[in-house]
Each structure stands twice: as C-alpha cells, then as structure tokens.
Length: 147
Image (cartoon, rainbow, N blue to C red; front, side, top):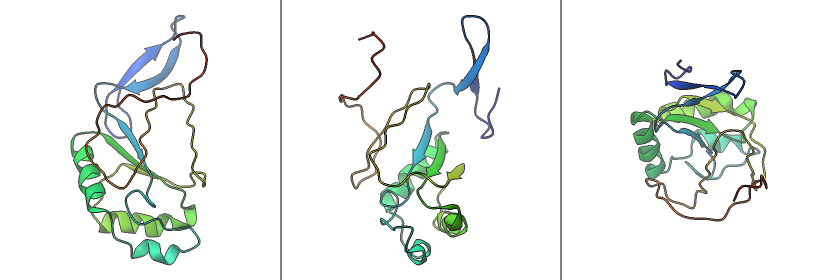
C-alpha cells in the first residue's frame, strides 16, 4: 500500500485481525518541521510582510533538501495561519525548499508535548541543522507498567 507521497506503508492489524492505521516501512521518516525561528528568522504572525522577504538558513535548506532526496517525507508544520499560506508557499518555492506538504495553524507558544499511538521523536532546533545523531535523554511517558 502506498500513501499520497508514493511511500510504502505497512499494513497493521490488531490481535483480532482488525485493520489498524498503517505505518511507514523501512527507514523513511515523516519530518514535521517548523518554519519561523527554525528554517528562517523568527517572524511573528503579526508581521506577515517580513514573511516574503526573509532569507532561509542555508544549513536548513541543504539538510532538508538532502532528507527529501533520501526519500523522507518533509512536512512544514507552522503557527502561521491560513491567511499566510500563499506567502509561505511562494517563499518556500522561491528559496528552493523541497517538501511534500504544508500544515498551517500549529498552536503558538511552544512547550509542545505530542501524544500519538505511533512512535514520535522530537528534536529541538538550537541554531544549526546537521545530520541527526543518537543521544540518550530523559522524556516523560505514560506509566504503562513497562520499564
């Protein structure tokens, strides 16, 4: 089975044979990437005129396009509103970002805690895009009795 990005999805079933949501097979990752403060200057929604003229961070552009070429899914997930979709799409395209989708309306304010039934990994951007490395960290999880 393929998803809309032409990537292979593994069919999953529960113990009763009921179909579950599929997941990507292999080493393909779904990257959800913020825009403001992550791939370009931190521009608030209240100043949309800056969205058209800001410059991309070169390391972000090269790294994301490399991940795209490696077959990963690139989805920009931004706090910009639907009113900013056109300027955002034009900016991404003009600056050469390769991506699969653009989700608007991410909640503002940070301190995100994503809860999902699929594996979620998070990486905080701290001023430099590089290849990802393995690192042991402490995270908060549900107490499911398994340690």
